[in-house]
Image 1 (cartoon, rainbow, N blue to C red):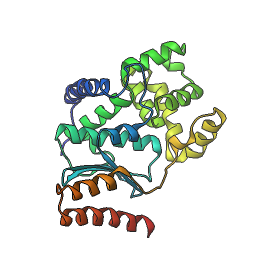
Image 2: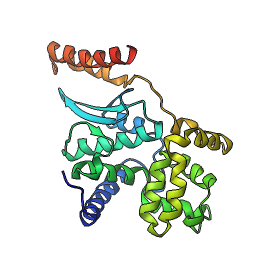
Image 3: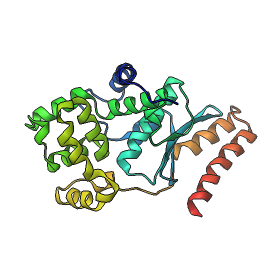
Length: 253
């Protein structure tokens, strides 16, 4: 599969931004960041399942027996998990299913690229970024400090890398200095980022993996109710429980 051209990326990015803007207005006030990604998605009827997996896997969405599941790799940092969740939400609402989402696929696959753009615009809408910069008197992104970046990352509840990527998109003239600061988010500098986050009173959970097994508790209640009402068969119930049990076994092994 060939790389997406710059022109094609621009078209897809605009399409995704419009879709994200529409959906975001129904989720939170336009002046607010997304503070509770998993809670919002669960309120929308999605069942979140998290488990640690190999690093290349970000997540995937499946619909089974009319249940919407969003699977997230908990071996990734919490900030990245939030991004992956909205990426998978896009696949769910668009119908553009592309299976398992792997790191780097967004550079080649149109649907994956649009899902990435959607997640970025949900968590980091440009209007809110401009508003934040203005309210914090950050007039020159070229000279933005690590303290300002980490504080901003914590406000938007995203990964450090996702914030830098968005700022580079909005301020292309500052790419040089932003690329230098992006190195702080590399694997080699994870201890340095952790140290600075602690020093600046930031939320270290955003930059560390959770490695947890999590299943939305409402799932079991709804499954039981649907079974009692005859909306789902005993066979389907067992299939769903077997699926979740296999994930639990994988986590515990």
